Length: 94
Image 1 (cartoon, one colour):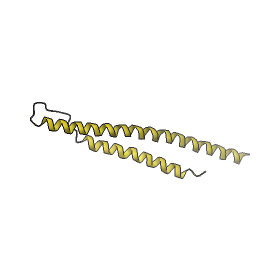
Image 2 (cartoon, one colour; image 1 turned 90 degrees about the horizontal axis):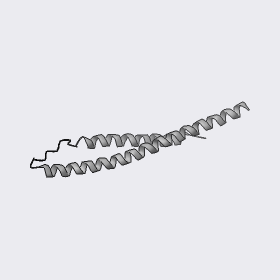
Image 3 (tube, helix red, strand yellow; image 1 turned 30 degrees about the vertical axis):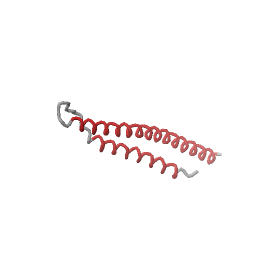
Image 4 (cartoon, one colour; image 1 turned 180 degrees about the vertical axis):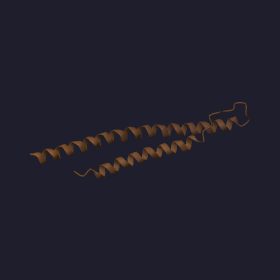
């Protein structure tokens, strides 16, 4: 069994998680933690902050999904590799 294509898929999943992490950092850099309520431009700032918060929520949702899928796929891939190695070693010994 050739495990290389499965490993390539796992690497692509891991790179997707990394890309989501970098994207989240980029979006969160635009976030203003201090909202000035008495400032005249607070309506515009709060609308912008709501949009940034919604985008961050979406990125977080997909980041969590991609991370869980990548971890589960990695564990399954490791199990497949160990099982295939065990079968191969069993055949050599017999």
